[in-house]
Amino acid sequence: METGTSRVKRGMAEMQKGGVIMDVMNAEQAKIAEAAGATAVMALERVPSDIRAAGGVARMADPTIVEEVMKVVSIPVMAKARIGHYVEAKVLESMGVDYIDESEVLTPADEIFHISKNEFTVPFVCGAKDLGEALRRIQEGAAMLRTKGEPGTGNIVEAVRHLRLINGQIRKIQGLSKDELYNEAKVLGVPYDLLLGVHETGKLPVVNFAAGGVATPSDAALMMHLGADGVFVGSGIFKSDNPEKFARAIVEATTHYTDYKLIAEVSKNLGTPMKGIEISKLHAAERMQDRGI
Amino acid sequence: MKIGVLALQGAVAEHIRSLEAAGAEAVAVKRVEQLDELNGLVIPGGESTTIGKLMRKYGFMEAIREFSAQGKPLFGTCAGLIVLADRIEGQDEAHLRLMDMTVARNAFGRQRESFETDLDVKGIDEPIRAVFIRAPLIKSVGEDVEVLSTYKDEIVTARQGTLLAASYHPELTDDYRLHAYFLDMVKEAAAAKA
Image (tube, rainbow over all chains, first blue to last red; front, side, top):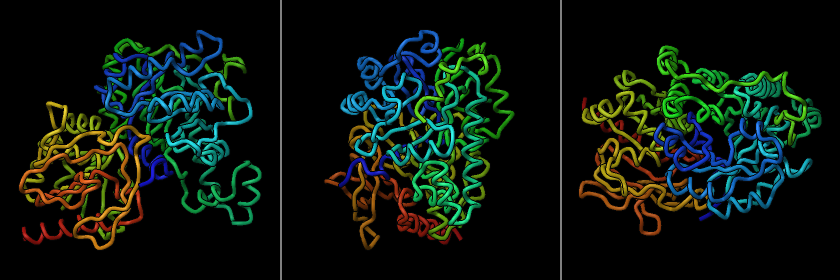
């Protein structure tokens, strides 16, 4: 009997496929998310758009919030640790959190090193905006990936950019010869073996979700259309007028992402989605995607 | 033989790959109309609350009960096992209620308690590698249910006529023998009907 094997960690993410993982800030929201069909919840003190508005240093949530959420739902509970913050991750693991997001949404604790995730029993998800970042995180032990997008903006453009880039790079790697692969590993700054795996299989060895800017059911369906395995929705749901209806709509649009009539149906009368931010209006320091590369 | 994998949420592609490796034609099923052309159906692992909710929403509860009543086999893994069960511990409502058993969700604990192990399964010669992820357990079964394997005295694989249930994930390994076992059930059922 072995716990914490890469098959067990990656397999847990496989079970999330085709699903929606929702940010929640308390027990009540967690119950709404579960009832709407979320496959997991991310327990947070503040959603990304509030983190942007509040400014200052964003850290791991108060353990009370995480515990409260774990108590009321039977679906998996995820929580965020700062990039490179080994102790926040250990604290979350000790509490029995099901998945840790080493996340650029929080203020990084380390500007160079990520957490050595292979040492943990609990699995990790990390953000990536290109194939280099994706494979570096996998090498460190991430068992699941998500696009970084630009969290808390309600603007899908960055998540689209990141998913298209990663999938385009994968197609390019497939077409390289073995000798070209050695150089490409050097250029991307990734281990050769992982790159060889991508070359041979034409895909990443872990599940890759969309995240960072999903604000409508159509946004979720667009990311599935572009090849995402599932969707994280952060600020979108509980910043909307009718979170319950909105959450259900996102779940259905993700499952039936090619059924456009159904997406039209579930998109009716959802009220105003979150306002959203034009990416070019962000200052360099406000771009969360540039953290932890 | 054409086998469907219910594709509302969960590990669909892995089951399709395993079924194909075992020699079947396999398709992802998103609409009830697709059931007509199938000889058997797999209900995959995922989140049972999500899968159950979407099954109700799109009419799969009645359609799959009807499919099963026609003698066509069903195979549920992990969340799929929960969906098949007649009774779920601690919940008033179950899902398909086809298999005479009581199941406990997340019976081993949280994700950090998830594990893999070698498992003897009745009807398969050598042990299979079983991956348990936030897995359910079968706490008790009715008299028509045959227990195919146990782990630490708890039931983890069971069969009731044309219904097969496993609390772990055979689709996450390269061992296709449990899928081949299910495929044999589908062939038998098709032969019995002909």
